[in-house]
Length: 351
Image (tube, rainbow, N blue to C red; front, side):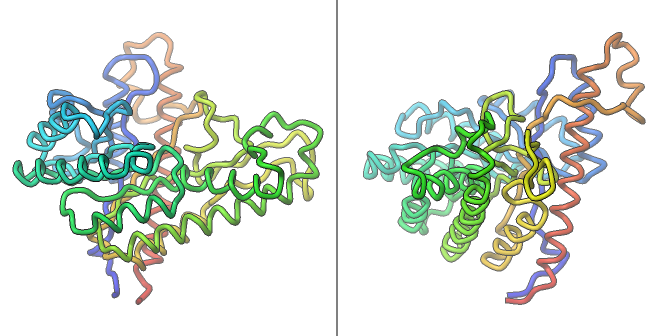
């Protein structure tokens, strides 16, 4: 299979208001997404919310993905009805709906499979969009792959690979095997034992990237459309206000309180090279038209001058949250440039 520039996967970014303020922040995001030619992935739970987001897309036919709430339980009839109603409203305007997986996928396997098949029938009746079930709760990657192997015939239900979630979980497993089950993410306080553990942490991250690439290859072999949540991570990261170790920029560095190999910081799990490997593996495994990528990177609270967007905030006395939003959008745009470059490189390869 060969790919061309005309067949590139759809690219999107996390599109939402993360800091307090008025709709000027959304307009700022819309403008920056338009400049980057990056579609939005939004969080919505009702048809009205979905319609509002559809009306403020960066450009009229911009690709859009809808991330459903965490409390949507696929085993409940009411949840499947809500998904059906959303799908009916947005069938012509979105790439798909993203739904978190559940432990029930393993612990109540037959019930979960029945629920997924029921959802597929509902979506078929309304000619709805595809639902992508996201790797989110830390299942064994092999169990996740086995599940999708069992539903490869379903047209309207497919897979979302969150490379940060898969990678951090795999790093925890790899490190724990050699350290009596210790969770590598508990080391982020950077205690006195950390310097001697740095080589093992590095090995666990290399193993994690391999797990991610292998999972992509296995899922690609099913020939089902795949959506990706792309973000970096590191067990030592303290950037997130939510305490998680991922949702980082691929250009981030993790600061250390000591010197390691001549530096006081270390690269993240993937970095630009790892992102390129992920994109190449995806585009080798599946036709580009069946792929979509969202940069799911969270803001870090830093600020950036508003530049050409300053007129949007003339009515603001304190512009801190506008500058924080602008910084976050600039980070998304830089990572989007990395993603586009990775796709261009992959598109020159022939499988």
